[in-house]
Length: 322
Image (cartoon, rainbow, N blue to C red; front, side, top):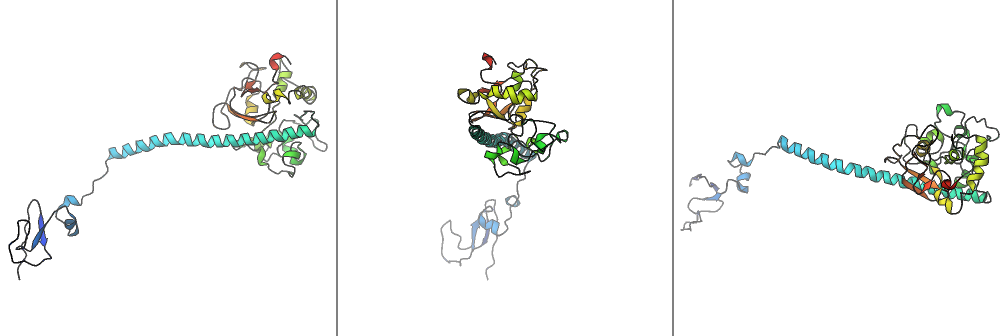
């Protein structure tokens, strides 16, 4: 039996050819007499047989520099995407909030019509409903529901005591509500402080009674007797017609707090205005409000002043006299 001759060169090594010796002369590219055929040391045959080149099997590692570059790229992408995703989420929440305010505004218009067009809203329900002992009267109970987690200092407040069924707007907005039923219409999706306004006060949306501060100038302080009598009658004429689209009736709880002592200028009234703050939807001093004609708006409002978003928290023709 012919023994296999093993040749190695710098270019190739050889393995046994499966063909038989042919016994006749071949061209320079044929290797009949040797019984072997050339194979590249880096080809598939070499890998199949194990090869002899250790470099063919080495795996190149990742350098620290490459890792740092990747981390930098991911950090940059993350920094770009997260704010835009968060902004889109906040925009969706503000849209839902305005939808709530529009529906509340529609129900308010229906309430006014049911009152034979008198345009009188019970901004403060004073005196207390019969059978209830109330010591703190607020603009939170025209609608809404009994506060699930009332402020410890507000245990005798109307929002902590009045059940849903005796709140006037609920006769239209949610007539089935009873007792401590939670009503989604009155919950702003961005009202998520601890506790939230709706948990502490039974709604995210109080009535805007800041216009009464204007009627009570120069101090801005008023009595409940004035509020449910003279001031309610005076604002009523601005609740319908052209001025209704400029008068803010409903607002977010944070906005109501921020506009305390707001005035015709940024100097405010009384002891001065509250500082501007972050709005509920993640943007500085941007708020959702509802107007007397039923439309809602969201955007920047300088809460040190009474004007913004194409309207006012005082009566629309305030500049022309009270």
